[in-house]
Length: 74
Image (cartoon, rainbow, N blue to C red; front, top):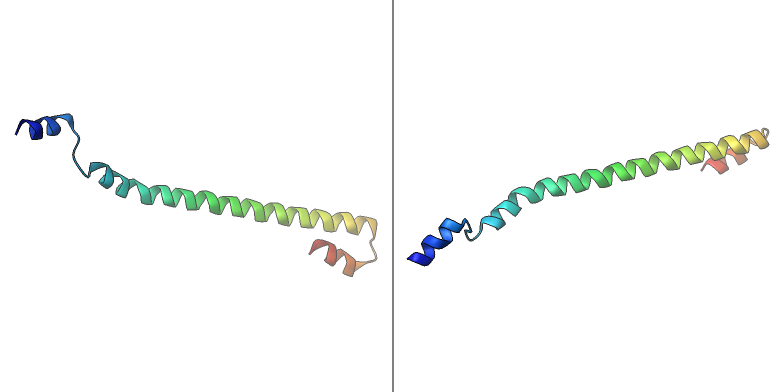
C-alpha cells in the first residue's frame, strides 16, 4: 500500500504521458502541415517571379519574337 501511495504523491501516473501526447500531437501535426504549406506557397511565388523576370529580360533583348518570349517564361 505504501508503494501505491508514494507513486501517487510523486505525481507519476501510468498513461499520463500518453494522454498528454494524444492531446498535443494533433496540434503539432497541424502546425507542421501549415509550415510545409507556407513553404510550398513561397516556392511557387519565387518560381513565378523568376519566370516573369526571365520573360521580361528576353523581351527586352528580342522584342519581335513573341513565341520565343512565351517559351522563355514557360
